[in-house]
Image (cartoon, rainbow over all chains, first blue to last red):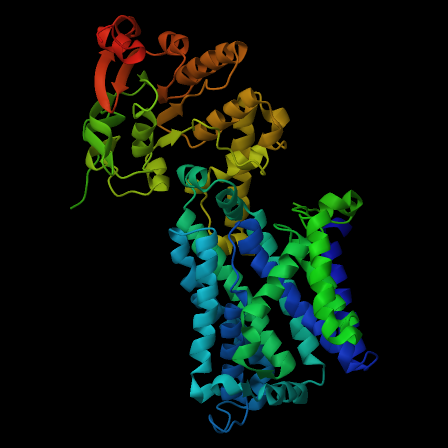
Length: 338
Length: 266
């Protein structure tokens, strides 16, 4: 009984505590925003791990898909529920925003998944370094398109999401953004874990380890690649959508190749093919970025230096390709890892 | 135009190759290759290095598309099919250099090989639906049964890379068999094995042939293996068929001896 529901109980408790702390304003807005970025980073690094870790491809255009999700859910949210200079009065009653919000975020995810086809289709014939180049190209294509779309602000960016959030809080007075970020972070890890632990999803690892053998042994490699790229970029879109609402402002410049690199760093820090590693490293990386803030610009010397040291002494990352249950066997008493 | 499977079901060839030619640029790797394998046969394909044996196997398993000629599996032409579709027609194979998924347990190697008959898709996997649970249970049960038949159940949770070479070969053959093929292609199964392992392999292949309803076609360099196992051997050299017949006939065939040892004309 405990074994079966331990994680559910733990998650509900964590979500409850988070909501309570945010509601009673026991933690500062600053800490709250760090926590939310942590969630977004977990979504990004876990979803990228599907492609870079489990499938063994090298995607460095993750921020591009994040950008698609961010813009689609921001524009949709503002168009439907907020007063905007371009779109005019809200299309629907703003009090509905609360119920529509998860669908708005998921719509961003779906749009990003479709954008993922930009990489998925070339991956049938291309792999390795060549596919990496394609992912960079995809990142640039997406950013350039949005930079040149004047109607949604072009390179000036797009805003108005704060009023969607405040109309959510008008309906039920709860700190909605931390709650949504928490729910979608759990959702992401949940989807990925179920995918990669099914026999169907183990086809992804088979492609990584020997693609020829996978294809001959009846794995439809093109289908698996398409699904994996779409899931990965779709979840990045979810992360992007949340990112946009957390900040309340998006601009194409914040989804450039540097952002993609940041996500890559988290994946390699955590360990390829380890979901718990990705979660852990996203948390650590976010904390580290904030902890080293007093160093100001020197931060960007210290963090890469830490990475160099990590790669020297532990190239497989924090967790290697192991999950939490492999590293701490006593955890198995509380949860059935499969 | 729809393609009908051959009407004569019982005696229909499991594999039928007509005028198969494969060119890589200027090199003709296989030229005008013909073969017909009947159900239950255990046939061999030999030839010196670079003769085009593995190319024939790669063509049959759909890895290459032939330049000319036709391959039919159970009467169905395989032209234009991706390898996993060819596998679904009932062809399975092993590789010259073992190609197991090394970072996946032996059990998972067998399970993933069931992708063709999985019975559920992405959304079932995410939702953990009844279909998913039933299919996974069936796959795991069948995989464990198969491992038990081959005395590999003790290694179910081992990683293949940690197993001795002979066992890796065996796991690869079991993985190929788990596809429930009508035709099993073995590409140099004895390569890299010592003489004890080779005797074991001969017993294994014969036992598989007797127990499972499967036609076996194998490539091998160890002549003793071929002589002992195969009813019929085909010899190719530089892509051309140079001899065909029973092991005794092949052993003394002048063209075969020339191909392997060269002739005394200078």
